[in-house]
Amino acid sequence: MGGRFPPLDKTAMSRYFLQPSGLGPRMNLHEGLNTVGRNPTNDVRLTEPSVSSFHCELEVSPAQVVVRDLQSTNGTRLNGASIEQGVVRLGDELRLGELRLVLDCEVPVVTIPQLKPVAAPAKESVRYQCARCLRVWEDRHLKRLKLGRDSEELRFCPACSGRCHPASPEQTATLPTAEPSLLNRLSQTIQIGSHPK
Ligand SMILES: [Zn+2]
Image 1 (cartoon, rainbow, N blue to C red):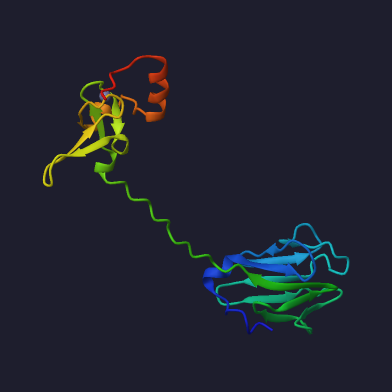
Image 2 (cartoon, helix red, strand yellow):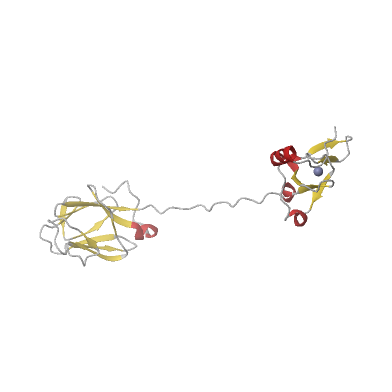
């Protein structure tokens, strides 16, 4: 027993616990002396009738976990052997009266910090304002026209086909970005802009 578990480790020390071999909640151990028994003043309180009021104590230190029997009525066994004192290794079974407990520990979780998303390049957030109807558009909504191979790509308003120019964030911060779908609905109910053919 114990061979498949890592050696006692200072980093895991505060995470030791006793796991009942049947169903039952685990019992956390703290650094230093942990008293175990049925008396409610114990650090680890057990209700099993065959456990004495003050059955044993477990001393948790960086180097090891030591169990000492406190002259209990039904005795303390470590991996089957009746003991007065012994070193408990991970995976070892303690038997207090009829109760079987296994020393286990939480493997310390190494957390990798989440990478924060890098802010999108500023040019992607540039919006365009129509010179004619003054609506503000996302770049993807605009009609484009390239007049020549090396010429600048021109952008046109999808609503009124007016020329659109990059608008500074300060300029457009207070202006809502138009959505073509909304605009289509608006243009059906009220006449806005002109629709050159
Ligand atoms: Zn326009």
